[in-house]
Length: 131
Image 1 (cartoon, rainbow, N blue to C red):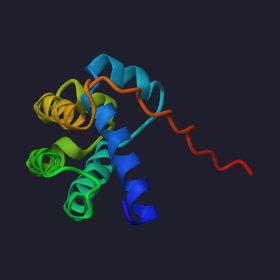
Image 2: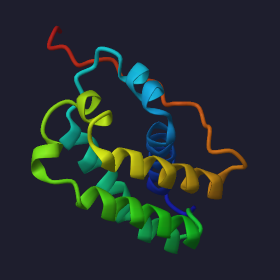
Image 3: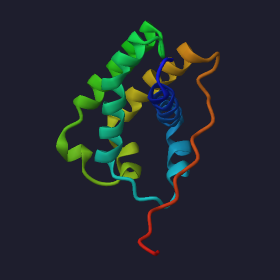
Image 4: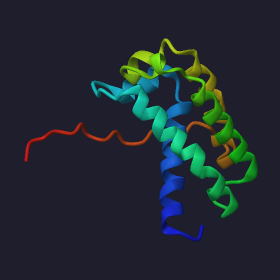
């Protein structure tokens, strides 16, 4: 890694992949009462998938990892606007794409580690406008 930003993007990607690889019940427990929009999740993951090519070129990810990230990006691209609307907790159990993305995320983590089961990222506290 030759850029500080690369290290951040690598960490961000690994955290998202750990969350995507988790079983649905673990994902729902991680979400808890948070109201995370599906569209926001899809946009974040699509961004990571797009920047992964540059990260792979700079040696942050192996080429085989890049292929898995690109497959995840293609699958996300197939989710229509109606399925992107609403809370992610609601679509995790109903949108088949998440069941297809889960094994891809696991495969990605296996290229990085010996086990796809990685600690889930610490949830970010919900935003409040209190100052």
